[in-house]
Amino acid sequence: MTGDVGATGGRGEVLALEATALRVDYPGAPRVLDDLTFRVRRGVRMAILGANGSGKSTLLRSLSGSLTPATGEIAADGVLLRHRRKDLDLHRRRVQLVLQDPDDQLFSADVFTDVAFGPVNLGLSDDEVRWRVAECLASLGIADLVDRPVHHLSYGQRKRVALAGALAMGPSTLLLDEPTAGLDPSSSESLVRVLDGLTRSGVTIVMSTHDVDLAWRWADEVAVLIDARVMQGSPGDLLSDASLLRRTCLSRPWQAAMLQEAGVAWGADGERPRSVVEVLAALGVRGGV
Image (tube, rainbow, N blue to C red):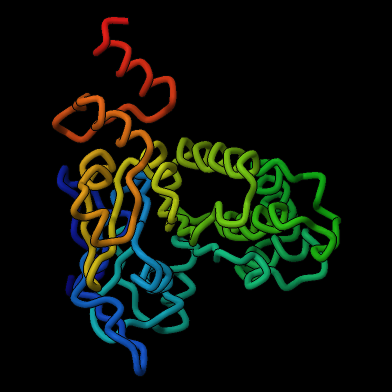
């Protein structure tokens, strides 16, 4: 990428995100990202996986513009990111990062003020700010928290408020760093349903996670970080690759384990049974049930 128009996807569409030849170093540590190229198509649910320290958070921070790589280029919706104040502001209208720990992102006394911070700094009218806050809180099922002090919220509620603050900026792409970490199973499932709703509304979602079972059933594509580079493909292909999983210290998703051990194959394009019902149906069909 040399201009303001990034590369396109395989069918000619402009990519939601593209990183080319990224290199990131930290003093006194091995290179985190090395000549890494990463592409995300619009509307895709992308899961990023890898061992601890593999560079998942570093990649997300680079894509969001909050970290400047040593070398390489990043584009969002075909527009090249330049690390200047005006260009970063424009980039963050397209791409928003939600950190793993909501307490690293929430800083206002109450929910309304925190979620309104971004829209206010965009120079929007008071009516537009109030509308955006109300819409985002309602979409996340936390409209009743609008006047609540942030320090009175549960961990899961704080996670949603941090997400609402990002959504209030109206981004086309959301970057989520371990969004289900620290949540109980019910809260995690609820959050995933919210994310599915955002996908249906046209938001591209890139999520880092250690949860291989979630990546298998949720993601359209996965990216696995290994040796400072990235491998991208379908969950059905990459998350059933025993050699790759060993090298990245990832376990096999239970869905892949059941299907592979029963000798059940899935489509050549990597499409696979995702849910409990679909896996049981695949096993049942093979067994003649």
